[in-house]
Length: 167
Image (tube, rainbow, N blue to C red; front, side, top):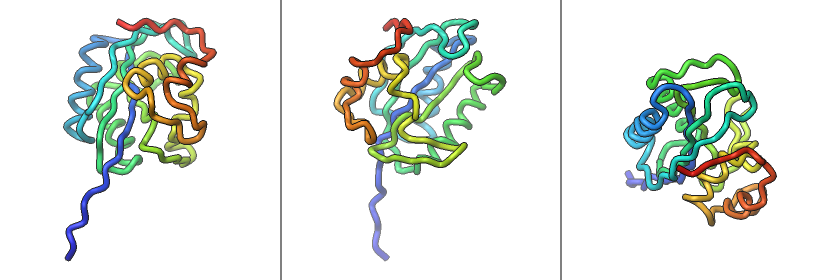
């Protein structure tokens, strides 16, 4: 039997939270991502952002993470949701307050559309400054597989006026 080498993918995730020990929750999430999904290879600075969508809540801390994994995008998503739950996330309101949020933004150069389950690239990434600033920090030259633009180019041309403050 031939020993087939595992195929690795680079996954880019955005972490966020606006309740509890925001920075501690992000650190713990990164540890769990590294333990359960794949080797974390890059982590952005912390960014503080006013709430987006539902604005009557505390500011978020956001951070982008790159990791190498041999898992499928669906497996990464399922494990990320497990990590959210392990860290105490309770889903109530869309765009509502949360201890932790882990979104799969990019998965290599794959385009995935599984309705009501997973869309990669994240369908709103290019219009959200709080996603693009940390992502452009760690992956400036990565090309969006649909738009054909680099993360840095998208970030520089974004129209979102939400204040995103690098800490």
